[in-house]
Length: 425
Image 1 (cartoon, helix red, strand yellow):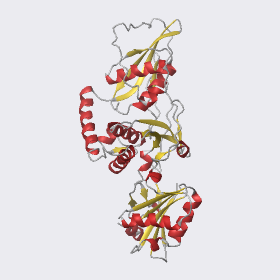
Image 2: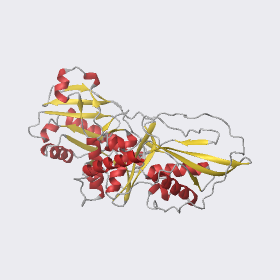
Image 3: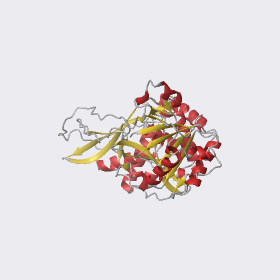
Image 4: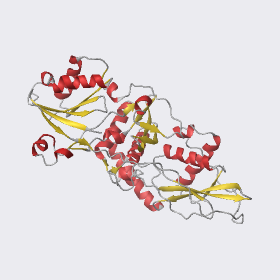
């Protein structure tokens, strides 16, 4: 994705410095890995996320003997409480998959090493576990879920799940305290009396400003990376968004799929009674680096080696908008998101459907006079955006609307209908 930063001084002799968004969305697609051991062990990997390697960690052999079969009894098993009725992915499952989902959640919450589940269908286990990972963002102590199939006369008669954990129970408790304390700090100024939109926007902006995108961040598949280390990738951003929104009583789930051809994670959020998509990772746009001007002192004086701003293009988007760049995994059905009231640009009055130079100029002026470092305006189509770019920036009309402005910059992104103007600070 090529983006130019153009610098304007007065109304003539415009100079152009070219920079580049360095894409940090280098994700690797994860396939389900089947590990066969003497007891037919299957590994269900964690949800696909950025920069996660495919790996096989066990020997491959074929189970042929019926002597290893032992039918487990569940007579003494405690009754599992259903606690996930209101969670999105859980509601999409049939009764069999919901029962397995409940069993997985119980096992993980209680750190069980093994639990027999109420199905002999491995596909049901895989679907149930994926739904758990969509709905529960807080299982940071879980490494993976494997399962052992018991068979007799070549027929599967029972399956037991065997979770593995990354930390001890004592370490888990310490980390939970740290996570809770940091989440409370982050939400200290949250608009508790505001709308769902206000709360979600607060969470979005807070995470982007406080957490860096780091490809090789430690624990980047869980919320430890966000709340303890403040470095993460897409999975961490999505889970942290879900974690904070749920603390604010906003229903949220994490969605996985493909974005720009690579594995990715984002959120489905219920805002003010309607579903929207939010991609916090793509909101973190502080990775503009002027690679082609490195060492250029004049460019450095104008914009520095990088420029930090928030990208709102994927805050509160519809299904149609999402699908232009994102493809969700197909296993968990998702709603058709058509509402637009809580889209950032529409909600903030920054969406332009027809050409109106004075209205657009007024939006630019309001941002400038209020001291904003960045003004963003979304247009209904690329043609309108290019017209505004030509009129206000290439032709210098921006200076007619912003008294005293001597220098302006803008981000030229051919993949977007959003015009981003940068004012000196």
